[in-house]
Image 1: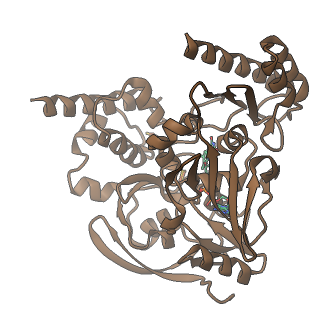
Image 2: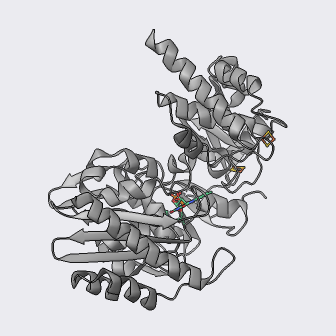
Image 3: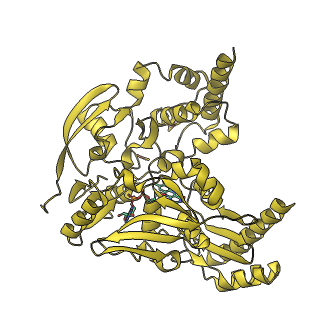
Length: 277
Length: 166
Ligand SMILES: Cc1cc2nc3c(=O)[nH]c(=O)nc-3n(C[C@H](O)[C@H](O)[C@H](O)COP(=O)(O)OP(=O)(O)OC[C@H]3O[C@@H](n4cnc5c(N)ncnc54)[C@H](O)[C@@H]3O)c2cc1C
Ligand code: FES
Ligand code: FES
């Protein structure tokens, strides 16, 4: 099918993009890498959108070391994140996640901000942001605000972003000495969305476990995390399986997803053991 | 029309080394522009939602999905399709290897595979079989079963590496 768009404007700056969204009066739609949005336009899942193309805004792209945190511009492409030495050093979870996302040609265009704003429950980066305790920085007509990843993902394809706000950057606490970050997922074929996936972040006194493709949003497995902190990996697997309620669909049953979640946790923990020895 | 937004836009870009100027409807994706406006029918429009890879073209040196980029977004870019790459003899060894290994039957997927494989080969070295499969995982072939395609791409990587070594 052929794409349909109500209109198009190329933003010259972040400020200009916000002005365009305001003037679009609810019909505006940010266009970043287009790897989800143009597909939706082609399928006419969305039409009459007034596209605000931010893809040329170099100010929104790139990775930088901001002292205590790592800051990643919303327009940084998946492939760039995969290549970035700064990301490899300070947020290895993201480097590893990239290879699970789609295919090379899609990673050349898709952006991390797009993946977060799109909020597909099966996507890797939203769960990574949650596991890492990232902060999402957004700008709108009323100024800037910072939203914790915990508060950003509200439902399937729905976030805390207002219709005239733009996600500009995310900031992450850096991976410290002795920390470990791993991602595990099961998908039918390379590049497919995961049937279930798990991010594990280990810090000196705490664990964070975030899952994707098991609920309407990425979720933190709080009871599982508490069991890990108490030094009880078997209890953590049990707690994890009990605390999630995944959906059944044409891809997998709820029971299978719950089973996978436990397997993924065991795989992740085994890798942490391997790292230590 | 809401001020600031347009339904048609002027674009100027380079396609296969030639400057091109056109006015495009803003909803038109790059592959339709190449096929319908420029008559470059090498890249195919098939699934049109990013799944099959038949539309793969090179934009500013990188393989991308032609169906997931709007033509208006190609403003100022350098686009290469299988036609231009063929004329430039940039992929002759790859094309010869595809023929020699029977890496195509109907040929519908081939332009996409060639551009995706060119991207992989540009990284240098000899990718393993697993790396080759992974890199080409976003391209569908309904005929060959892939093995011959992987063989062809790896044989070119090996030949290029051997040439570089002398
Ligand atoms: C075949 C295929 C397989 C894929 N597989 C995976 C996969 O396995 N895992 C995965 O995670 N993803 C996958 N993707 C999606 C891909 O990662 C996209 O790049 C990503 O979801 C969207 O990023 P984008 O920059 O392309 O955003 P766009 O498509 O441009 O935008 C997506 C949405 O986010 C909004 N948006 C984008 N940027 C901003 C911003 N800065 N501020 C506010 N709103 C914004 C847009 O308005 C739109 O609603 C796949 C895509 C395809 C086509
Ligand atoms: S036509 Fe673009 S990926 Fe299928
Ligand atoms: S040769 Fe027919 S689809 Fe690949």
